[in-house]
Image (cartoon, helix red, strand yellow):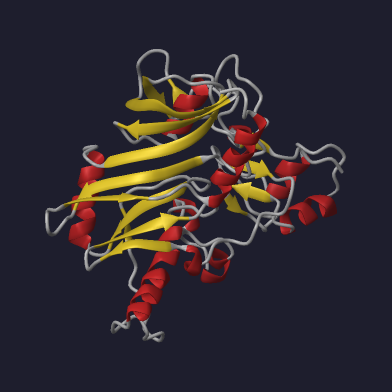
Length: 333
């Protein structure tokens, strides 16, 4: 059995309604049903970034199926979520990689047992808040019998992306924060490790849901939503890689990943959009995930009106990859 390791498969209209097992059999040479089921049960298949262990799951048009070389690690738990700021209206957390921000619409009807196999950050944060309050010795945090109050998502970052997110703890706070993100008045700075030597500049395109191959991308006719990303190099690793700072003027789905890939400098570890750019150098960084980190987040507090700003240091996995690159290109900067 030779599965297409590390590859991505897009579910098109002709595949709609197929089971995951049937879909994979059509893309893996000479694979038996039992081999495909073993692959799925072994946590080696993702759908929309979530581990799927149900070989009989029916696929929908537009979904993305990814086959992994190795079993996906255990999903993050509430103890893996670091709370950066907490008050009665908002909570700011440092998201670990490997967890989606919120649950996809088609997954919201899943039973609790199935959701627990791959929890979302939105589902983990209430328990993380309870742990934080218990650590502070505050009432409510130590009362384990009480069900943690849900939080409200006002923005999202990708499953493989790490870094800062804010959740609202009340309905009014959620409305005010959502309006700030809609009007692009928040401050967001990302750090990305990309292939090639990238100079400073501004990327301005219009993004559409389907650029013609089933993937999101920039349109050639000006249709779609305006997306603007400001890019500045932070550190060069010879001409092979660059650590760049990306500031969002707008916040579209996968905006940074698409813009950098289409520029010919995909983020290390990128699989979905890596082929979008022209004359792209091969990624030999061995990055374990998409090397993108939400390093800074700023917004106006929905109750006090104060301007808040938070920063998050680079996570350990990005630091390890960069450390190896520094050794490889020590004399070539």
